[in-house]
Image 1 (cartoon, rainbow, N blue to C red):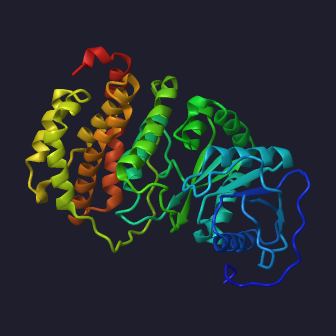
Image 2 (cartoon, rainbow, N blue to C red; image 1 turned 60 degrees about the vertical axis):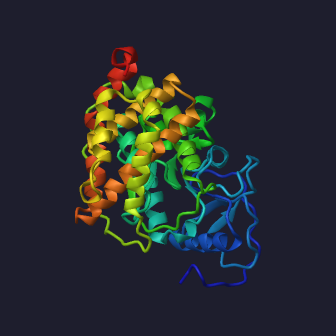
Image 3 (cartoon, helix red, strand yellow; image 1 turned 180 degrees about the horizontal axis):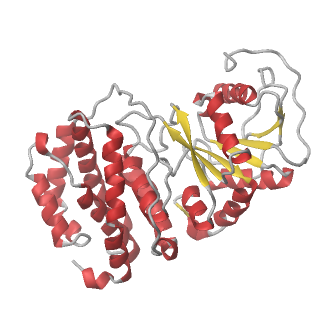
Length: 400
């Protein structure tokens, strides 16, 4: 395969500013992963000249491909060991696109070598010839993978920004020059970056850019920089909630919902099934211990729904999609109002998320396709959006 074949080639010369073409920005990664990614790029864009920038030392004796021309590393700092695309990485790519007059850009996260050459080509083509400003991959994950995305990131992005990409915080992006210019300006706004995370799909919605989703198949996901679930959810959830607060003027305006994209993914299995009973027991304990904190955030109707849920036996444990949507919206509002310390607030959301996970896994065990349940969850967020807008505008009127 092209990813593993090696040949001794002369050290490639560095590029000088030019006009047009494709620029690829790579994230910091291992030498082995970098070599494989470069080989994949050479195969994906065979016969086409591509500019490549990487924060890591480029290998000297690998099959780099004569169609790849290398840029000096960006002077924008890259967070070592990052598992997401960071604002500095994105900003460095945007600057290089402007400097070299690139027509389109690919920004690839860690472990990008696991993407097939055809996927990289399709991502680039979405902006080079497909008319899109932002190309976002639709990864083929297992039914028990990426559940925080399925429970919160995707439903909130779809309901508030009318954005359809299944992974609004994707590890890889394709950008037109126009998108790079608009997103570069957005990165500079401190209100758009929280916890070191930038939300390109939301920014594209604000800017009126055309976003296209591209089937990406399977991808190796780099492990998060932290292993503690509370810390991880606080980092991502806190950033998302802050971004929603900053963009309130946009999502409060009424817009017709876009039809959901047709799901063409094939279900895959996982070798690590979760202990659903343990998740349910953790939720029941939290329902007792966190009741007072939840009462500061949730209205009585939601608290009553949680009490009913805590009394269900495992086979019947199902969190209603509307209840989950309203609770998430209530937590976003509490984040804005600083009803309590934001760290404590997001920690109090964790057991509710785990209850959703338990419900989701039981739905899968019942034979319902995983994407059907995810789409039902997203549809509930769309249906409950008027509730969120009302609470946002008049929080005292709905004060629990």
